[in-house]
Image (tube, rainbow, N blue to C red):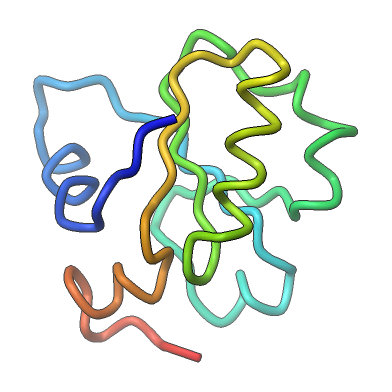
Length: 107
């Protein structure tokens, strides 16, 4: 699993020549409703084992949470399930709000 800084993810998403990763937000519903990255797919951490087969294992997946700890756990789980291109958003949506989108709501 690769660690991805918020600025690196922003550059990736802004590059029209690169295929877009799946943004997998594993926070709770109330957290997702407060703030999230545009286009993120919401799948709370506790539901990932039940629904991970719905994800495209051949696609780059960036796992996102509040600060990066839960997303790292989910990323490790996905790797054990055979997913190969997993990235953890280091610092989570908090880092995104600080480094990329200061208008994003923080908690």
